[in-house]
Every structure is written in C-alpha cells, then in structure tokens.
Image (tube, rainbow, N blue to C red; front, side, top):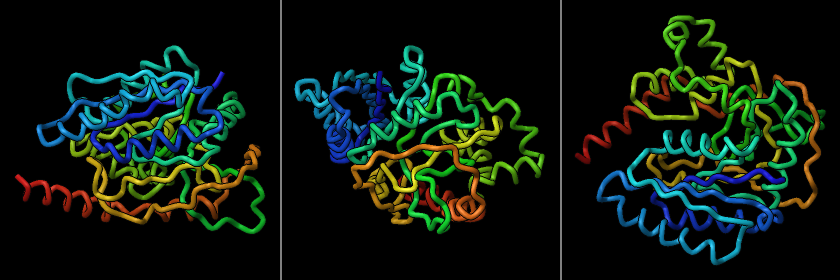
Length: 303
C-alpha cells in the first residue's frame, strides 16, 4: 500500500497547477491517494485567487490523475501551521505514514517511488525522524558513496514521516522556558542551522506561525535524523514573492533529479563535512532577525 499524499494549497493557482501536474507525471501517481487541503482566504484581497485555486482542484477528480482525490475546503482561514497540523492529524490516524507537499513544490518523476521506498526502508529505524524529498546542491566528499545523507534538521519542502513520530510531537513546546535559558541546548539545536533557536524564539513569542520549527524541535528532543537525497526530488518554485511566508530568493535553487535509476537506500553515518555544508546554507541568528524586521516594516508600510 502506497502512502497517501497530502497537498496544502492556498492562493497560488499557477503554482498549484504545476505542483499537481508534476506529481501526476510520477509513475506511481495512478496508484496514489491524494488529499488536497484548501485554506479559506485570510482577507478580501486573497479571495479571488483562493477561488481560482478551488476551481482548478475541483476539476481533478474527473481527470483521473491519481487513484483518488479528496478535497477538504476550510470554511475559515486556519493559516499554514494549523492547516498542516490538523490535516496531517486527520489523515495519519488511518495511515501509518504520509507524504506531504505544499502548493509551490515541483517534483521529479521518481518522487513517489523515492518517498515510498524510503518510508518502507527506514520505518523500523528509530533514529530516523522523517524523509526529505528536497536537498540543496551540496559538495559531497569524494569518498562518500551513499545516495542519501543524514541531517539534524527536517525539511518542509516535500517530506514524509510515520504515525509514531508525528504523534510524539509536543506542539505546545511545554519545556520552552528551560530551553530558552540553557545555552548548551540552544547550541545543540543549532546543529541543524544557526537560525533554529531564533526561529523557535520567534514562534513562542508569537512573531511567526510555524509548524515546521516545532516539528524540528521535537526531532531534536528525540535525537533523531532526517534522510536527504544527494540529488533533489523537489524544487521550490515559490520563492518568487507570491507566498504568504516567503520572499524572493534564488538561494535555495537546486537541480531536480532526472535519472530513471532507483535510489539505493542504506544506513549512512553522519558525515561532518556534509553537516557543515548543509548548516552553512542557513543564515545566522542576526540575519534571521534582520530579514524578519524587514518583513514587518514592509507590512507596516502597506497598512
């Protein structure tokens, strides 16, 4: 049985179309159940584009792209974090594993086979928290032979996990006050990127609304890893200023896998060179707050 795919959409009709059509080009698409969660508009400005997205996804059942398509339309605006948490909660109750996409992710033709094979291979490995379909273009050591690598940090750009991992997350981050004051814990959390502790601070201060940083924090608390491919199966097309939570950037551009060869999974050791290269893709705490403050200023100028 293949893992169901959950797709979270909002107000980007063209991005949504590209996301769904690329997924439909996968060889396992016709055997895959797809659940599309459509959030309601946050304001009148978003209403037209949300309706365009909904008009498009309403046509999918007749197109027979997938084994089945179920569309869940929210009657009120939940925001991305609550949409993802509640949506995954709903579907994972009946499935031991899920694959998750958002509306700005183009996938390679082998994305579904890569994700399903990885889910099956690592399910009983209790050191693995999640599977990522996305990866940066990294420079790997010449002697590194595995087709995947491990990281301390999960990815929200095309990912998969299992029910037992998902159910263990403390979405309230009930021990945050201890973490906030403990430098050794903050430094350890930042092994996945120098921005991580600052992002959790911003989440708990109500400055951002992120499911992903809380997901990563629970991964850190569990001392587990995310499996990444050496060659990406996902490309983010949403860093063009069109998204609610993203600006304009080419920093995370990556090469999409074109090989027809199936990925061979193994149990690689954590590699310090790769971890350092991965970590360097993220900004510092200072950079994070500079970017955040710029966004706040821009929002204030639009009021």
